[in-house]
Image 1 (cartoon, rainbow, N blue to C red):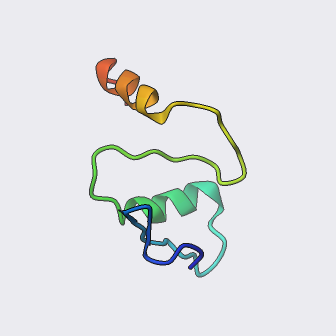
Image 2 (spheres, rainbow, N blue to C red):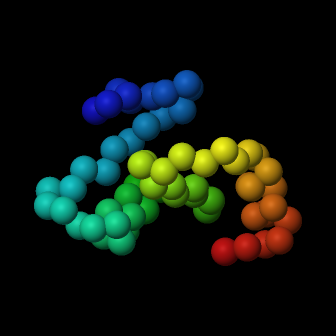
Length: 65
């Protein structure tokens, strides 16, 4: 596990694939571990200069899916 069990006060739970599932399969497996109604998914090899707080605010105020 790269970061261990937590990072900057946030709990980390890893979703490990026994065989490669592709992006969709990996997300489906990871979603089974999520209890929140909101989740942010980003590619690990992509970098964005974005304010995630603003993104979340817009998501909530527009009632986006």
